[in-house]
Structure formats: structure tokens, C-alpha cells
Length: 232
Image (cartoon, rainbow, N blue to C red; front, top):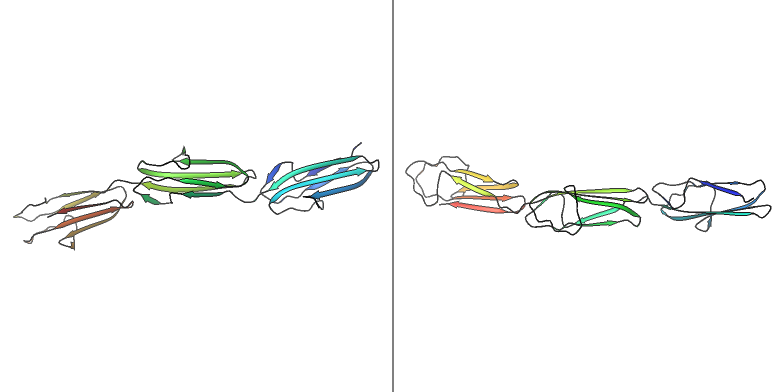
């Protein structure tokens, strides 16, 4: 009868993201010699393996009747998460042009990966044209169970701010006080500048002094779209 070899602590063709401690148990009524190697080097039963890498554990047992039994188990220790790189877009950035997110996932033991844009499956390298707020989520998991997630939020806004001025009109003359009312509309407004003859002006202020006036309104949104309106 061949010696019986049992190995605990690892399984054949398994991947681990933690250290492992293989233990070998040999059962035989007349045991003689035992050889245990790890990657062709002598292995001490019960030692803990901590370093990442591919391993082959080989056990050979011979009894006094020269019955020989062998067992080979291959396994991998991988404690490193997949590396996710996203190019073409950056987190919390506003764009006034179309963008092309490019996702690269690196892991020699990669198992699964998902890429979604606003909860819909997204293919790396596809151009995103439409205006809107986008949530790009990338998740990758390797065979050892290491998982990594990267999330990026970005906005495409190709529309200039809309400037509306009431209370005065271009080229008009008035014989009464005037009250210019300025309204700037933009979902992602960033900076608004209002000047009257080069000096800061506040919407709804009354202009009563006799003079020629140059009212300039400038608006810039977070994507860099800008608009200017001048009333003379």
C-alpha cells in the first residue's frame, strides 16, 4: 500500500492574497523516507510562506517496502491590488470639449474588471460628446481576490453663459434715472464681472448722473466658456 500524503493550508492551483502555511501529513504503517521541496528547494513542514510568487510544493514519501507516493501542488501568493490608470479625464474637472477616457488595468493575475459611465457599461477609448455630469467607475479584481476601485467625476459643458440685461438698451438715451438689471445664467458659472465705465457695478443699482455710460458684463463658467455683453 502506498503511503498516504495529505497537505493542509494550501490547495492546488489556488491563489492567495495572504501568507500561507503548508502542513504535510504522511500516513503509512512502515514509513521510511520523506522529501518535501518548495520550488526545488528543501522545505520545512509548517513553515509560513510570505513572499509573493508562484510556488510548487512537491512531496515524496517512501515506505520500507519501497512503495513510493508523490503529491504536487502549485499555488500563487499575490498580495498586490490591480493597478488602474485613467487618462483623458481627471476628477472634478470641467471640459468644454469632447473627452476620451482611456482606462488601463494592470495585473498579471487579473480576473474580472468592470468599467461603467453613469452606471452603463463603458468601453475604454470611446469619445464622450454630450454635455452632462459623468461618473466613471472602474473596478478590477485579480485571481487572489485583491480588488481595486477608481472613481472619477467630470463634467462636459460646451455652452456659454447667457447674459440678459434689462432696464437699459444699447444706443438709447434717457431723461430719467435708469436701473440696469443683469442676469447671468449658467449651470456651472464660475466668475461674473460687471463694470460701468470701467468701475465695478452692482445689478439693480440706480444710475442718475448725467453721462455717457458703457456697461460691460463678462461671465466665465467652470469649463472655460465665456460670454461678454456690452451696452453703450
